[in-house]
Image 1 (tube, rainbow, N blue to C red):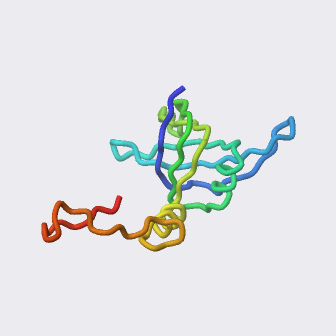
Image 2: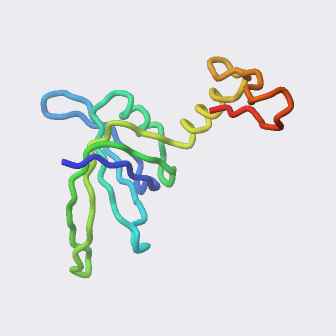
Image 3: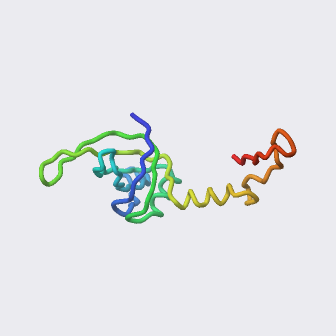
Length: 133
């Protein structure tokens, strides 16, 4: 098993399903662009409640990044050409909503975000700017 972080756009609306034993899970299909410019389909399945909720909140065409354990696969298209694909068990989901929320939280003075620190240069007039990491 390999761990990966994959970014792409949702090809189909995520679906919530129930296993034969009654366990809930979510599935999604992601289209990612491979290094050669070809599209690569990524079949996503999420069991973790947070990952499930994040996937189910998305719609077709939404940009998303998923992290988890991947398994490489191949499939055959209508013309008989074999193409690569990936299956991923999603552990984490990152969307533009998460990025905007995190950036807002990290803004100086934001609730829970870093506060402006006093100037920490080597001297009072050294011309350096404070670094906010």
